[in-house]
Amino acid sequence: MVQGLDFSKSKLSGLIPPTIGECSNLLYLDLSKNSFQGHIPTSLPDLKGLEYIDLSSNNLSGSIPSLGNLQYLQLLNLSENKLQGEVPSQGVFLNASGVFLDGNPELCRGIADLGLPKCTITRSHSGRSQGLLIAISAATIVTLTVFVFLVMLFLKRKRTRRQSSTETENEDSKNLEAFEGNLSRVSGRPDR
Image (cartoon, rainbow, N blue to C red):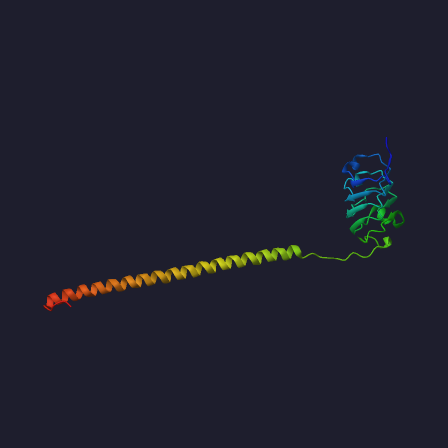
């Protein structure tokens, strides 16, 4: 039964395999001084018996997963990576002397004792703003569509009235001529 993995300084690269979480009997894990990249595997918290984790001096990025359920974890070294975001505030992170995070300039504190800068609160209104923008756009499109429809309807009616008026004038002229013709026959006057 393997209780520890030490692959430090092994020139390993790529992603840390997510299957690392299946090594349920591990007490220590040292993958430091390699070229691992990507996120810390989300399966790492499944190693409930871990006492020591060293993932320092790699190219790991993203946020630190919650390790609060690793109740035996006494030392966590994540220094010299590219980690970012707020550091969790439970478990091993409550013991500042057992956590090493130097060399990750984009990390911010979860706990003041870690000596990290405060996290800036960036309340994202982008979701609301995007929803508002979509609603305004939809309302504008509907309004323009109704406006164009009304203009087309107005122009069609105007054209229909013009045609109707012209037809009525032609009929009136014909009727007037017919009437005058009938009138001249009755009165005995010749047609024009």
